[in-house]
Image (cartoon, rainbow, N blue to C red; front, side):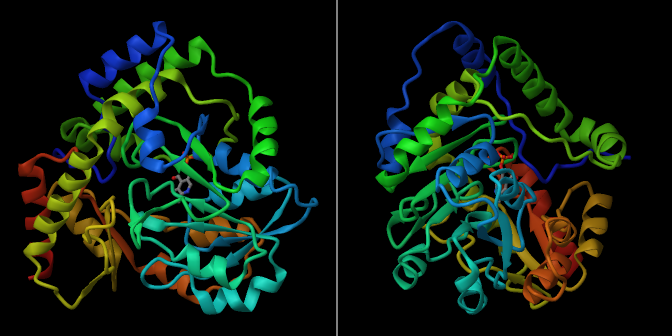
Length: 383
Ligand SMILES: Cc1ncc(COP(=O)(O)O)c(C=O)c1O
């Protein structure tokens, strides 16, 4: 057993801690910077992005059992929110570049009453083209991975009828559980307002628990503890799917997100881009590994490095033996989708992605030495 650099970013600094304690006692939290970034005048803050997504879906006012398109290669919370809102998910295939398969969408669109576009790994799907082609189809942009990514000069989330974002653990920027909803189409604003008012308010006790948990999680993701305890013991257990209660966002999360992270967002993005460039520099476009285009483009947030390889598990095993964790993100996506009614074979590329995707960490919290180490491990495996 040895120290291991974790693949997910659970950073929680002393400054985050101080800000969250301030949040417990102060009443003013300014959100101007975030509102300006997103070019909106209001956001609806929730305890998770999945809550924001459920509210967005319910606010569409569709009849029970309506069909909502979701990406097959995805987090289970996305079809989960569709079910929670009383609708039925229809799975749409995803291309090798992690964007929507427009041919599969065209084949299934007549069945759809709404569509959720997930901008996977911060890589943008062209929502404007979908909107132009299907102007009557309500679109919700799932920007859980895609905060501060741009497409054709516009920030993601600004084109669909509504957009949801996650501040959650290991998202970008990583804070603590939380999400928010932006409404672009004013037609839905009143319904959103009503659904939002019906949410239970986060309690003082849950604030305290969150501050403590954030510290514990940050500690558990320090390489020495991660290698000796978190990965081999805690993460080896089969995770239990808990039905998360919905509520508004914790003030502590909101304060840390707005004050500590958003105000440094350009620095955090540029650090991730530099990290990704260093990690990829050593392998010189090696042909066993296909890197999605745009991962380090000037428009994306460079959230993680997703690539496709023949045998991702072999990379994961090699890396962990060298002290780095690579990931097989959403490797359970087909199993989850099947629980939500997916028929095997209807999204063949998504099924292939589940077998091929390897995700390499490049988050802003990595030190220079850790970035060098990740670069060496990848190079040693390939060359
Ligand atoms: C693509 C995607 N959408 C939505 C979510 C839900 O985010 P949250 O955990 O804040 O509910 C996740 C969470 O991992 C995700 O990966």
